[in-house]
Amino acid sequence: MTDTAAQAALHAAAEARAGDVTISGVTKRYGDQTAVDGLDLHIAQGEFLSLLGPSGCGKTTTLRMIAGFEEPDAGDIRISGASVVGVPPHRRNVNTVFQQYALFPHLTVAENVAFGLRRAHVPRAEIGDRVVEALDMVRMRGFADRRPTALSGGQQQRIALARALVNRPSVLLLDEPLSALDRQLREEMQVELKLLQARLGTTFVFVTHDQGEALSMSDRIAVMRAGRIEQLADADTVYGSPASAYVAGFIGRQNFFSGTASGALVEADGVTLRGTASLVDGTAVRAAIRPEAVRLASGSEPGENRIVGRLVGISHLGESMQYIVESGRHSIVVLTPRPSAPSVQPGDDVTLSWDAQDVAVFPDERASQAPEPTPAAS
Ligand code: ATP
Image (cartoon, rainbow, N blue to C red):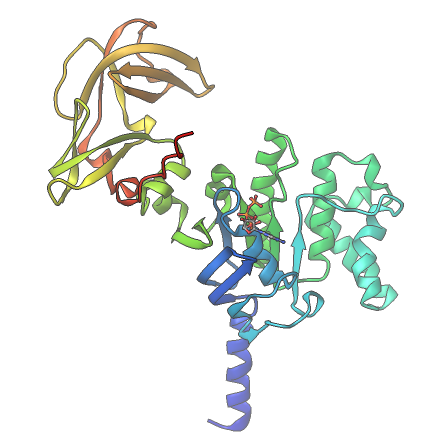
């Protein structure tokens, strides 16, 4: 290969990688608290990746380390192939959108969006064009002369997005940016954000504790637990084939049955569930069945993958009906699409049934944990 051809190949490889993020063995501690614990994660160029998990699992700390607001205690973070450890935030070609829009109230929308470009001494003529381009991206061109106080929450968040995109970052970091919006607006913005990301091809790293939000937008979801990734997969996989009871319980709703495995059977306090995989006899397990996988019918016909109980509650959830059925010490939730809702009343005896392929069985981690210390007698 000639020198020029080699340089062109190198350049092409770097272009293809511009905006990918590689996190290798990253740990971050605050005192004796480990916020992020030996994290490995590769985010591809142009990917929409969500970091999902409950409060305190390390999502924001991970994002802040990519942004450069925090430095790892161990490990490496590479953006577009180059290590950014020790590199200040404004030199990383990333930008962050926060939950709080933090717009300057005394500046117009256009001035807010132009602020970063002015500080970076971008030529005045170019600033005007780039502000218009960024406002177009978020469909807010007509609002350039308004003050932020004259905008709705959703509009303010769009301006915050335009302000982050105007610098043309190769990675956009979003820290729960929709959580201050009401539900309908949040759902509209989810669609908009996904479309915008697909159009721009910019890598998005999105932090959320809202599983619906992560499922609706992401190419892949990293479900985090105690500073580590419990499962990294697309929405279909984390929903349909969760890697653990923790993921199963966090993504969507589940009916859990604690019991003991015997081949493909789980005996759980009067209920016999048959799954599709065989487990070592005597293993303590948790079987999980999604509410939408349970069928409800009137009558009492016990058996395998069936349970007889009493209907104690019916709620309308719009497109579906929710039923609560009590059986022994189990309380089971059933979701049925409204058109196929059975004709039953609270107080009726009912039979619930499901298919073996809808029974997910996980080792019961709680069974292997040390018992809680008992309080000393006073
Ligand atoms: P949330 O959804 O509540 O923001 P999170 O998953 O983003 O949670 P982090 O904010 O990353 O979690 O926090 C992870 C752990 O690190 C938590 O236990 C938190 O209390 C701790 N932590 C985070 N930042 C600091 C800090 N500046 N000083 C001390 N502890 C911190």
